[in-house]
Image (cartoon, rainbow over all chains, first blue to last red; front, side, top):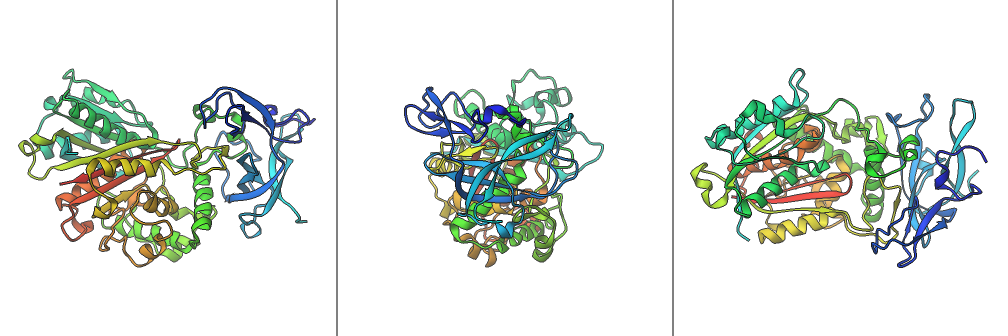
Length: 136
Length: 382
């Protein structure tokens, strides 16, 4: 598996985000955490998050962020959204689409791993992003 | 409940950028102005509460103000720092511990957006590295969802910023003192869709100080005291949509603003309908829009009509951000909440000059909101 921004965010096969589910009340979190923010319990189990959901909100990042951003020096605006994963939670993620006219709240989107930057050895570093489903 | 605390002296250092003057020096300027306004000396102060995000420790101001052994407590509570300092003073007076003291907030931030270390919020480094940890981005995401939910068009965002600059032009202590048309605001570079550059406030500089005392002794120091009739601070609940959130709960909950505002009004025995002049957090245009409803000043979805009809202008029946708000004053974090209280005190004293609201206002309201999901509100009366 290629290098990721943080392996602890993903299932071991790298195909899904890894969250937590509260054993007591069923609340989900991402990333994983040891305590439940809803019922204040402390028994949380790892759970893979759905790869498909619907776009809940979006924006386009219009300028290159300052440190600690590590994206390429040559900046291209990128989409950021919140995606509702049914029955789990609403996750924040980069979007593969950066044209606001091609994004719409409620549209179906799917998670994929995308190269985010190149490390010192020239190898790609992957992060998660959501892409509109059914678009070419 | 009867107010415990009265503001009997107010002081400000103009907001904006003052090259060569430190944040601490701006704080000293504001404190001396507040003391002079109350006709008192620093040696009369029994306590101090002060806040600054990045311009030095407030308790070190005593080296300049006077080494009198008073208890001086530093308050650090993000965007609610000023509100928390004022609440702390209220508690000190309400408890009977002290009768008379000082509240001060100041800051001096460099140009550009705030950059925050994810670790200080308990978030992994990946969040900042991949470009998700930006307050500007959060506000874009939040207003996009809000506009969608309540069926509000984006045009009103430029109208809000236009009002901020118009009010700032009337305020000698404001940073941005030039009017900018809604068309120019809408056409400015897009920072985080649908918010353009001129819709955001910028990190800035400034200082505000108050001399506060037991409300029943206010007339000893001042002919026109302003009473803190209600004040409340709240943090977020499970389900609210807050900055720096890698995830949100599907079950939505109210913002901390809703509870802080309701608690402040309840304490004052007043309702939002009683408010004559309001200052609400306008980190960007969308924040003013959302906060108008979250504070209870209007219904969700009613903002568009209120704003476009001029109701929120200085001459309207619900004047909001009469000093130009954060958009025209910038946001020195430690001073920003107290600036709202300063403006409200000016309005209630009838001393706001060109930006004075008409009609002899008696009830003012202030609201701050910020990271990591906190809000502080006050109800001020005379």
